[in-house]
Amino acid sequence: MTPVRQTIGLVGLGMALGPHLASLRDLSGRAEIASAWTPSPQRRAAARDMGLPVVETLDAMLANPA
Image (cartoon, rainbow, N blue to C red):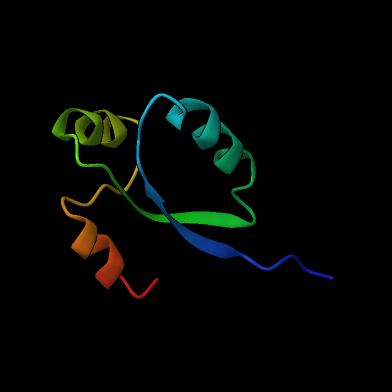
């Protein structure tokens, strides 16, 4: 049976982001990050530097049909 690929959004990009991102990248065949958001501009910038698809507002994330 082929695993179902899940599309997810990450809310909160704090201290646990590194380990969580590593796990999600290990699951790249099963999980895709559609967008990522945090209220902190500094953490959004850091997440962009890590290659995440960052959005500027939570509303933008929730409006994404993926």
